[in-house]
Length: 395
Image (tube, rainbow, N blue to C red; front, side):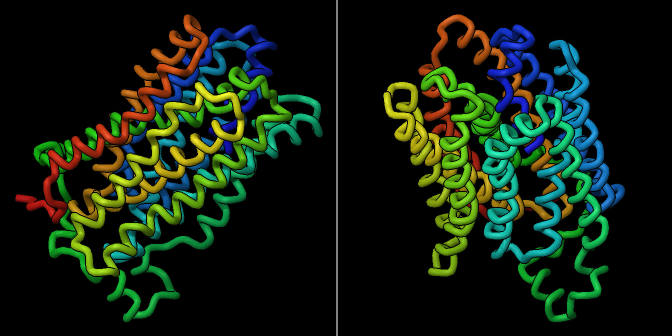
């Protein structure tokens, strides 16, 4: 929800502070710059201080950063707040993927990833409903940032109180621990130097997908409310229902998409065929979003975005799992983190393009053409780079 607030308030704040399209894109770029820096550092940080402490520090920092938006009045001020928020949030996915690899055997990780991945979708579902209510109840836009930022601290208390690794948990039996480690390779716990990962073609094939699909997902999060505002003239009180529909379907796509390759595996499909078939289906499902700015029905456009966003979540849940299929546990957070860094760097360039296209053309047609084609290209690159998904031989 913290990430969604600024996009939801963009029409209001753009009018209040006289923002241009390039001003807003600049704020988004600052977020991505921090996200890029944070993700490249967070994998090693998890290995150093552990998942529990690293994740707690990340959440505390981004909670304070989210609330700091309420103090801002200028483009540089909001840009600085977005930078801090991006730095804090950058720890989320590397830590979450690490948690999945700590708690689940390989055959169950895609489902587990799909379930936790719905968290961001739940936030995107609730935010369009809560933000207008909070702003109306308290009578000011600042309240949205402060209230939702405080919610993070509630989650943090639960995290610190309940989370432990399976080996330290009092609730895990010997049989359960054996099940968790079933399917792990002998090199699972080997510490792998950061630079060593850059030698592997499998890593770069994964990174190639990140730089193509990552900017698209970030674009949806930052600009989707603005699309409905510009295309269908919906304001803060009225673009909530389409956004709720989009992200509700997205949440279902995250769980169902994460489970698709697992279901194929249970039916006896080989790992490579199951993972690639699932991701190819997801890639094809993103293509209809190209037509969203060319239709007159708000609900047809909503359906296109819902399908594309759900397909992205299925794609990401499966690809995160593919990383754990290929690399040992100690490398997973670093691989995912560096992929997120590259995606964030590419997103900065994409956001610059989006701002200038909207400032000049005032339409999303060419932007969504890029979004619709990105996943099919990403799937092709990964298939060529990794003809067969299997554990990498770490020399």
